[in-house]
Length: 227
Image 1 (tube, one colour):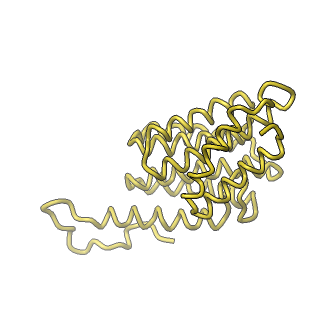
Image 2: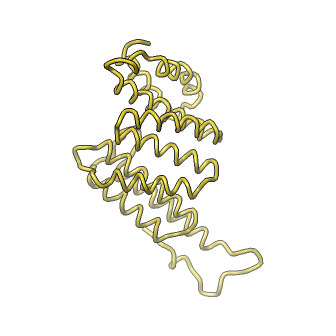
């Protein structure tokens, strides 16, 4: 494929198919799309930056798919390629997209602390310059705060989980709509769903008795965070 517009359409279609949960279709189309972004001549001429952005987006969806399929090694490989191209493209949105997928791959590989450090560092960096007229950066920063909140919720750190959810909620308010910028599906509804999910997970963990022990009499779920 030598047409940049056609390449963008192919990559966007791949994201749409993925978000529609048509994973078999993604698997069939993905090799051709990756071959196109790898060999696209625009990466070596005046269209280099736009071609690199298409490359990042293609490898981001590839990372999503293999992460979902449970292949940590392939997920890290795809996410790393996206991250490398994002740096070359000098795009905050692309770095956020790629960084999110690196964090997901690290989680899949049980490298939880590394995933958390990356998500927080990148979320902090991208949140500082966010403005409502940069919806893609707002969205990727918000998505990074959400995954950081999920990680905190997994270890039942309610204070950190809710603080990060609040950061994401502020960005969703700045965005002002349920959108899908940079294929994040980020917006107020997405934040609300994460808040419920994180709360339930933390509450369930706190209610679960340790082996051989029972909860003290009088302990109840009212001590857990609730929406």
